[in-house]
Image (cartoon, rainbow, N blue to C red; front, side, top):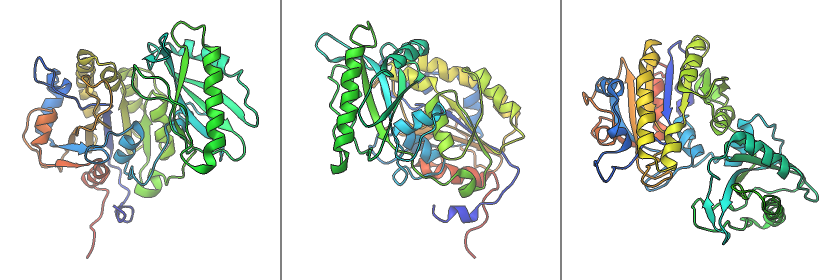
Amino acid sequence: MEKLPGLVRETPSKIVLLLIDGLGGLPHPGSGKTELESARKPNLDALAEKSTLGLLEPVGPGLTPGSAPGHLALFGYDPIKYEVGRGVLEALGIDFELLPGDVAARGNFCTLDEKGNIRDRRAGRLSTEENARLCQKLSTIALEGVQLFVQPVKEHRFGVVFRGSGLQSELSDSDPQKDGLAPMEVKPLAVGARATARLANRFIAQARALLRGEKTANMVLLRGFSRVPSLPSMSELFRLRPAAIASYPVYRGLAKLVGMAVLPTGPGLEDTLNTLAQNWARYDFFFVHVKEADMAGEDGDFDRKVRVIEEVDGHLPRVLALKPEVLVVTGDHSTPALLKGHSWHPVPFLLYSSTCRPDGIAEFGERACGRGGLGLFPSLHVLPLALAHAGKLVKYGA
Protein backbone atom coordinates (compact mmCIF):
# COMPACT_ATOMS: atom_id res chain seq x y z
CA MET A 1 0.00 0.00 0.00
CA GLU A 2 2.94 2.36 0.57
CA LYS A 3 3.79 2.11 -3.15
CA LEU A 4 0.27 3.06 -4.25
CA PRO A 5 0.64 6.89 -4.46
CA GLY A 6 3.54 6.49 -6.89
CA LEU A 7 1.43 4.38 -9.24
CA VAL A 8 -1.59 6.66 -9.56
CA ARG A 9 -2.36 8.64 -12.69
CA GLU A 10 -5.10 11.14 -13.42
CA THR A 11 -7.88 10.09 -15.78
CA PRO A 12 -11.38 11.47 -16.46
CA SER A 13 -12.97 8.20 -15.27
CA LYS A 14 -15.48 8.38 -12.41
CA ILE A 15 -15.71 6.32 -9.20
CA VAL A 16 -18.82 6.23 -7.00
CA LEU A 17 -18.61 4.80 -3.49
CA LEU A 18 -22.23 4.24 -2.46
CA LEU A 19 -21.92 3.60 1.25
CA ILE A 20 -24.93 2.21 3.12
CA ASP A 21 -23.88 2.83 6.71
CA GLY A 22 -24.12 -0.24 8.95
CA LEU A 23 -25.08 -2.42 5.96
CA GLY A 24 -24.15 -5.84 7.36
CA GLY A 25 -26.55 -7.70 9.62
CA LEU A 26 -27.41 -11.00 11.28
CA PRO A 27 -30.17 -13.51 10.40
CA HIS A 28 -33.59 -12.86 11.90
CA PRO A 29 -34.62 -15.77 14.18
CA GLY A 30 -37.91 -16.11 12.33
CA SER A 31 -36.74 -16.07 8.70
CA GLY A 32 -33.07 -17.00 8.94
CA LYS A 33 -32.27 -14.04 6.66
CA THR A 34 -30.36 -10.83 7.37
CA GLU A 35 -31.83 -7.39 6.70
CA LEU A 36 -30.02 -7.22 3.35
CA GLU A 37 -31.11 -10.75 2.41
CA SER A 38 -34.70 -9.98 3.43
CA ALA A 39 -35.00 -6.80 1.35
CA ARG A 40 -36.71 -6.77 -2.04
CA LYS A 41 -33.88 -5.33 -4.14
CA PRO A 42 -34.19 -6.31 -7.81
CA ASN A 43 -31.76 -3.63 -8.98
CA LEU A 44 -28.98 -4.55 -6.56
CA ASP A 45 -29.45 -8.26 -7.25
CA ALA A 46 -29.30 -7.68 -11.02
CA LEU A 47 -26.17 -5.56 -10.57
CA ALA A 48 -24.58 -8.23 -8.38
CA GLU A 49 -24.82 -10.76 -11.22
CA LYS A 50 -22.67 -8.44 -13.38
CA SER A 51 -20.24 -7.56 -10.57
CA THR A 52 -17.48 -9.02 -8.47
CA LEU A 53 -18.46 -9.66 -4.83
CA GLY A 54 -16.78 -10.18 -1.52
CA LEU A 55 -16.85 -9.47 2.20
CA LEU A 56 -14.94 -6.66 3.88
CA GLU A 57 -13.07 -6.76 7.18
CA PRO A 58 -13.02 -3.06 8.22
CA VAL A 59 -10.14 -3.18 10.73
CA GLY A 60 -9.21 -6.74 11.70
CA PRO A 61 -10.69 -10.09 12.77
CA GLY A 62 -13.03 -9.70 15.72
CA LEU A 63 -12.56 -5.92 15.95
CA THR A 64 -15.74 -3.84 16.04
CA PRO A 65 -15.04 -0.58 14.17
CA GLY A 66 -16.29 2.86 14.98
CA SER A 67 -17.41 5.16 12.19
CA ALA A 68 -14.01 6.81 11.73
CA PRO A 69 -11.88 3.69 11.14
CA GLY A 70 -14.64 2.08 9.06
CA HIS A 71 -14.74 5.04 6.68
CA LEU A 72 -11.03 5.88 6.67
CA ALA A 73 -10.14 2.38 5.49
CA LEU A 74 -12.53 2.75 2.54
CA PHE A 75 -10.91 6.09 1.69
CA GLY A 76 -7.50 4.39 1.51
CA TYR A 77 -6.13 5.27 4.97
CA ASP A 78 -4.83 2.59 7.32
CA PRO A 79 -7.23 2.84 10.31
CA ILE A 80 -4.54 1.55 12.66
CA LYS A 81 -2.01 4.18 11.56
CA TYR A 82 -4.45 7.08 11.38
CA GLU A 83 -6.57 7.35 14.52
CA VAL A 84 -9.21 10.07 14.48
CA GLY A 85 -11.34 10.90 17.49
CA ARG A 86 -15.09 11.27 17.27
CA GLY A 87 -15.00 14.68 18.95
CA VAL A 88 -12.91 16.18 16.16
CA LEU A 89 -15.24 14.74 13.53
CA GLU A 90 -18.36 16.19 15.16
CA ALA A 91 -16.75 19.64 15.38
CA LEU A 92 -15.49 19.62 11.78
CA GLY A 93 -18.85 18.33 10.57
CA ILE A 94 -20.63 21.45 11.82
CA ASP A 95 -17.88 23.73 10.47
CA PHE A 96 -16.52 24.59 13.90
CA GLU A 97 -12.98 25.93 13.48
CA LEU A 98 -10.72 23.89 15.73
CA LEU A 99 -7.41 25.43 16.76
CA PRO A 100 -4.20 23.53 17.53
CA GLY A 101 -4.41 22.41 21.14
CA ASP A 102 -8.22 22.33 21.28
CA VAL A 103 -9.69 19.17 22.78
CA ALA A 104 -13.06 18.15 21.32
CA ALA A 105 -15.52 15.52 22.51
CA ARG A 106 -18.69 14.11 21.04
CA GLY A 107 -21.66 14.43 23.40
CA ASN A 108 -24.97 12.59 23.69
CA PHE A 109 -27.94 13.92 25.57
CA CYS A 110 -29.28 10.90 27.43
CA THR A 111 -32.00 9.88 29.89
CA LEU A 112 -31.15 8.66 33.40
CA ASP A 113 -33.60 6.69 35.52
CA GLU A 114 -34.28 7.39 39.20
CA LYS A 115 -31.30 5.22 40.19
CA GLY A 116 -28.89 7.19 38.04
CA ASN A 117 -28.55 4.50 35.36
CA ILE A 118 -28.92 5.20 31.65
CA ARG A 119 -32.42 4.43 30.41
CA ASP A 120 -31.83 5.77 26.88
CA ARG A 121 -28.40 6.75 25.53
CA ARG A 122 -30.03 8.93 22.86
CA ALA A 123 -32.78 10.60 24.92
CA GLY A 124 -35.41 9.35 22.47
CA ARG A 125 -33.46 10.89 19.57
CA LEU A 126 -34.73 14.29 20.64
CA SER A 127 -35.19 16.95 17.97
CA THR A 128 -32.30 19.07 16.78
CA GLU A 129 -34.27 22.16 17.86
CA GLU A 130 -34.52 20.85 21.41
CA ASN A 131 -30.83 19.96 21.26
CA ALA A 132 -30.01 23.59 20.39
CA ARG A 133 -32.03 24.85 23.37
CA LEU A 134 -30.19 22.53 25.74
CA CYS A 135 -26.81 23.46 24.30
CA GLN A 136 -27.58 27.10 25.02
CA LYS A 137 -28.26 26.12 28.61
CA LEU A 138 -24.97 24.20 28.87
CA SER A 139 -23.08 27.11 27.32
CA THR A 140 -23.55 28.99 30.61
CA ILE A 141 -21.13 26.57 32.33
CA ALA A 142 -17.85 28.23 33.32
CA LEU A 143 -14.62 26.32 33.86
CA GLU A 144 -11.61 28.10 35.27
CA GLY A 145 -8.70 28.46 32.86
CA VAL A 146 -10.45 27.31 29.68
CA GLN A 147 -12.90 28.52 27.09
CA LEU A 148 -15.83 26.17 26.62
CA PHE A 149 -17.88 25.74 23.44
CA VAL A 150 -21.04 23.61 23.39
CA GLN A 151 -22.50 23.22 19.90
CA PRO A 152 -25.58 21.31 18.68
CA VAL A 153 -24.93 18.73 15.98
CA LYS A 154 -28.06 16.70 15.14
CA GLU A 155 -30.82 15.04 17.15
CA HIS A 156 -29.24 13.91 20.45
CA ARG A 157 -25.65 14.64 19.39
CA PHE A 158 -23.65 17.71 20.35
CA GLY A 159 -20.02 18.74 20.41
CA VAL A 160 -17.92 20.11 23.28
CA VAL A 161 -14.63 21.91 22.72
CA PHE A 162 -12.22 22.81 25.52
CA ARG A 163 -9.75 25.57 24.60
CA GLY A 164 -6.81 26.52 26.77
CA SER A 165 -3.13 25.88 27.41
CA GLY A 166 -1.76 22.48 28.32
CA LEU A 167 -4.90 20.46 27.52
CA GLN A 168 -4.50 16.77 26.70
CA SER A 169 -6.86 14.48 24.80
CA GLU A 170 -5.78 11.16 26.36
CA LEU A 171 -9.02 10.70 28.27
CA SER A 172 -11.45 7.83 28.76
CA ASP A 173 -15.13 8.13 27.80
CA SER A 174 -17.95 8.78 30.22
CA ASP A 175 -20.31 6.92 27.85
CA PRO A 176 -20.50 3.16 28.57
CA GLN A 177 -22.28 2.83 25.19
CA LYS A 178 -24.92 0.60 26.73
CA ASP A 179 -28.24 1.28 28.42
CA GLY A 180 -28.76 0.11 32.00
CA LEU A 181 -25.35 1.25 33.22
CA ALA A 182 -24.33 4.38 35.07
CA PRO A 183 -22.28 7.09 33.30
CA MET A 184 -18.58 6.64 33.96
CA GLU A 185 -16.03 9.05 35.34
CA VAL A 186 -13.64 10.50 32.77
CA LYS A 187 -10.16 9.25 33.62
CA PRO A 188 -6.72 10.32 32.37
CA LEU A 189 -5.01 7.81 30.11
CA ALA A 190 -1.67 9.62 30.40
CA VAL A 191 0.06 11.34 33.32
CA GLY A 192 -0.24 14.78 31.75
CA ALA A 193 -3.99 14.44 31.20
CA ARG A 194 -5.11 14.55 34.84
CA ALA A 195 -6.00 18.25 34.81
CA THR A 196 -8.02 17.90 31.60
CA ALA A 197 -9.88 14.91 33.06
CA ARG A 198 -10.86 17.03 36.07
CA LEU A 199 -12.18 19.75 33.74
CA ALA A 200 -14.25 17.23 31.79
CA ASN A 201 -15.75 15.80 34.98
CA ARG A 202 -16.58 19.28 36.25
CA PHE A 203 -18.37 20.02 32.99
CA ILE A 204 -20.37 16.77 33.27
CA ALA A 205 -21.29 17.48 36.93
CA GLN A 206 -22.49 21.00 36.12
CA ALA A 207 -24.38 19.75 33.07
CA ARG A 208 -26.19 17.18 35.20
CA ALA A 209 -27.22 19.90 37.65
CA LEU A 210 -28.50 22.16 34.87
CA LEU A 211 -30.46 19.35 33.19
CA ARG A 212 -32.00 17.93 36.37
CA GLY A 213 -35.42 19.39 35.60
CA GLU A 214 -35.59 18.08 32.03
CA LYS A 215 -38.00 15.20 31.43
CA THR A 216 -35.98 13.33 28.81
CA ALA A 217 -32.52 14.77 28.29
CA ASN A 218 -31.43 14.95 31.94
CA MET A 219 -27.75 14.02 31.53
CA VAL A 220 -24.86 14.08 29.07
CA LEU A 221 -22.40 11.41 27.93
CA LEU A 222 -19.00 12.29 26.43
CA ARG A 223 -16.71 10.21 24.28
CA GLY A 224 -14.03 10.51 21.62
CA PHE A 225 -11.84 13.17 23.25
CA SER A 226 -9.41 14.20 20.53
CA ARG A 227 -7.33 16.87 18.82
CA VAL A 228 -7.07 17.58 15.08
CA PRO A 229 -4.67 15.11 13.43
CA SER A 230 -2.64 15.79 10.31
CA LEU A 231 -3.58 13.58 7.35
CA PRO A 232 -2.40 13.82 3.73
CA SER A 233 -5.31 14.57 1.42
CA MET A 234 -6.81 12.13 -1.08
CA SER A 235 -5.73 14.55 -3.82
CA GLU A 236 -2.12 14.34 -2.66
CA LEU A 237 -2.10 10.58 -2.24
CA PHE A 238 -4.32 9.39 -5.07
CA ARG A 239 -4.53 12.33 -7.51
CA LEU A 240 -8.30 12.39 -7.20
CA ARG A 241 -10.82 15.22 -7.23
CA PRO A 242 -12.99 13.79 -4.44
CA ALA A 243 -16.38 14.99 -3.24
CA ALA A 244 -18.62 13.89 -0.39
CA ILE A 245 -22.42 13.91 -0.35
CA ALA A 246 -23.48 13.32 3.24
CA SER A 247 -26.10 15.00 5.39
CA TYR A 248 -24.83 13.87 8.82
CA PRO A 249 -22.12 16.08 10.35
CA VAL A 250 -19.72 13.35 11.46
CA TYR A 251 -19.34 12.02 7.90
CA ARG A 252 -18.94 15.53 6.53
CA GLY A 253 -16.19 15.99 9.12
CA LEU A 254 -14.46 12.80 8.00
CA ALA A 255 -14.63 13.92 4.39
CA LYS A 256 -13.11 17.30 5.21
CA LEU A 257 -10.31 15.66 7.14
CA VAL A 258 -9.14 13.78 4.02
CA GLY A 259 -9.57 16.77 1.73
CA MET A 260 -12.88 16.03 0.05
CA ALA A 261 -15.11 18.82 -1.17
CA VAL A 262 -18.24 18.55 0.99
CA LEU A 263 -21.26 19.30 -1.18
CA PRO A 264 -24.40 20.86 0.33
CA THR A 265 -27.39 18.55 0.11
CA GLY A 266 -30.82 17.96 1.58
CA PRO A 267 -31.70 15.24 4.08
CA GLY A 268 -33.30 12.67 1.77
CA LEU A 269 -31.93 10.16 -0.72
CA GLU A 270 -33.64 12.06 -3.54
CA ASP A 271 -31.70 15.18 -2.50
CA THR A 272 -28.46 13.18 -2.34
CA LEU A 273 -28.82 11.89 -5.89
CA ASN A 274 -29.83 15.31 -7.21
CA THR A 275 -26.59 16.67 -5.75
CA LEU A 276 -24.64 13.81 -7.34
CA ALA A 277 -26.09 14.52 -10.79
CA GLN A 278 -25.62 18.29 -10.52
CA ASN A 279 -21.93 17.93 -9.64
CA TRP A 280 -21.07 14.98 -11.89
CA ALA A 281 -18.74 16.94 -14.19
CA ARG A 282 -16.72 18.58 -11.41
CA TYR A 283 -15.25 15.56 -9.57
CA ASP A 284 -13.96 12.07 -10.30
CA PHE A 285 -14.56 10.37 -6.91
CA PHE A 286 -17.91 10.58 -5.12
CA PHE A 287 -18.53 9.37 -1.57
CA VAL A 288 -22.32 9.01 -1.32
CA HIS A 289 -23.46 8.31 2.23
CA VAL A 290 -26.75 6.74 3.39
CA LYS A 291 -27.09 6.93 7.17
CA GLU A 292 -30.55 5.56 7.89
CA ALA A 293 -29.68 1.84 7.76
CA ASP A 294 -27.22 2.29 10.62
CA MET A 295 -29.78 4.22 12.69
CA ALA A 296 -32.37 1.49 12.22
CA GLY A 297 -29.84 -1.14 13.24
CA GLU A 298 -28.88 0.77 16.37
CA ASP A 299 -32.55 1.11 17.26
CA GLY A 300 -33.02 -2.65 16.86
CA ASP A 301 -35.57 -2.07 14.09
CA PHE A 302 -35.01 -4.93 11.63
CA ASP A 303 -37.94 -4.06 9.36
CA ARG A 304 -36.97 -0.38 9.11
CA LYS A 305 -33.45 -1.32 8.07
CA VAL A 306 -34.94 -3.56 5.38
CA ARG A 307 -37.02 -0.62 4.11
CA VAL A 308 -33.98 1.65 3.92
CA ILE A 309 -32.14 -0.90 1.78
CA GLU A 310 -35.20 -1.20 -0.46
CA GLU A 311 -35.30 2.59 -0.85
CA VAL A 312 -31.66 2.61 -1.93
CA ASP A 313 -32.40 -0.14 -4.42
CA GLY A 314 -35.25 1.88 -5.91
CA HIS A 315 -32.89 4.80 -6.56
CA LEU A 316 -29.99 2.73 -7.91
CA PRO A 317 -30.99 3.23 -11.60
CA ARG A 318 -30.34 6.97 -11.17
CA VAL A 319 -26.74 6.24 -10.17
CA LEU A 320 -26.24 3.77 -13.01
CA ALA A 321 -27.68 6.27 -15.51
CA LEU A 322 -24.67 8.52 -14.85
CA LYS A 323 -22.46 5.67 -16.16
CA PRO A 324 -19.64 5.71 -13.61
CA GLU A 325 -16.63 3.67 -14.68
CA VAL A 326 -16.64 2.10 -11.21
CA LEU A 327 -19.51 1.71 -8.76
CA VAL A 328 -18.83 0.27 -5.32
CA VAL A 329 -21.74 -0.58 -3.01
CA THR A 330 -20.84 -1.53 0.55
CA GLY A 331 -20.90 -0.36 4.18
CA ASP A 332 -18.39 0.92 6.70
CA HIS A 333 -19.29 -1.78 9.24
CA SER A 334 -22.14 -4.09 10.22
CA THR A 335 -24.93 -2.87 12.50
CA PRO A 336 -27.20 -5.89 13.09
CA ALA A 337 -30.62 -4.95 14.42
CA LEU A 338 -30.37 -8.01 16.69
CA LEU A 339 -27.35 -6.45 18.45
CA LYS A 340 -28.53 -2.82 18.38
CA GLY A 341 -25.02 -1.61 17.63
CA HIS A 342 -21.90 -1.91 15.52
CA SER A 343 -20.40 -5.38 15.26
CA TRP A 344 -17.29 -7.18 14.02
CA HIS A 345 -19.08 -9.12 11.28
CA PRO A 346 -17.73 -8.76 7.70
CA VAL A 347 -19.53 -6.32 5.40
CA PRO A 348 -21.07 -7.19 1.99
CA PHE A 349 -19.16 -5.68 -0.94
CA LEU A 350 -20.00 -5.19 -4.62
CA LEU A 351 -17.80 -3.69 -7.36
CA TYR A 352 -19.28 -3.06 -10.79
CA SER A 353 -17.10 -2.06 -13.75
CA SER A 354 -16.68 -3.03 -17.38
CA THR A 355 -13.32 -4.54 -16.37
CA CYS A 356 -14.48 -6.67 -13.45
CA ARG A 357 -14.81 -10.47 -13.58
CA PRO A 358 -18.51 -11.08 -12.85
CA ASP A 359 -19.18 -13.80 -10.31
CA GLY A 360 -22.59 -14.51 -11.84
CA ILE A 361 -24.22 -14.54 -8.39
CA ALA A 362 -27.62 -12.90 -8.81
CA GLU A 363 -27.98 -11.73 -5.21
CA PHE A 364 -26.47 -9.04 -3.03
CA GLY A 365 -26.36 -10.39 0.50
CA GLU A 366 -23.97 -11.58 3.18
CA ARG A 367 -23.90 -15.25 2.17
CA ALA A 368 -23.91 -14.46 -1.54
CA CYS A 369 -20.97 -12.09 -1.14
CA GLY A 370 -19.16 -14.77 0.87
CA ARG A 371 -19.19 -16.89 -2.31
CA GLY A 372 -17.83 -14.03 -4.41
CA GLY A 373 -14.50 -14.02 -6.18
CA LEU A 374 -12.92 -11.47 -3.85
CA GLY A 375 -13.58 -13.56 -0.74
CA LEU A 376 -12.84 -11.94 2.62
CA PHE A 377 -10.44 -9.01 2.33
CA PRO A 378 -9.50 -5.78 4.18
CA SER A 379 -11.48 -2.59 3.58
CA LEU A 380 -8.12 -0.89 3.03
CA HIS A 381 -7.91 -2.68 -0.34
CA VAL A 382 -11.15 -1.20 -1.68
CA LEU A 383 -9.69 2.06 -3.01
CA PRO A 384 -6.78 0.38 -4.88
CA LEU A 385 -9.31 -1.96 -6.53
CA ALA A 386 -11.52 0.98 -7.51
CA LEU A 387 -8.53 2.93 -8.87
CA ALA A 388 -7.38 -0.06 -10.91
CA HIS A 389 -10.81 -0.67 -12.46
CA ALA A 390 -11.04 3.06 -13.24
CA GLY A 391 -7.74 2.88 -15.16
CA LYS A 392 -6.01 5.13 -12.64
CA LEU A 393 -3.10 2.83 -11.72
CA VAL A 394 -0.01 2.17 -13.83
CA LYS A 395 1.98 -1.07 -13.83
CA TYR A 396 4.15 -1.81 -10.82
CA GLY A 397 7.72 -2.87 -11.48
CA ALA A 398 9.69 -3.64 -14.63
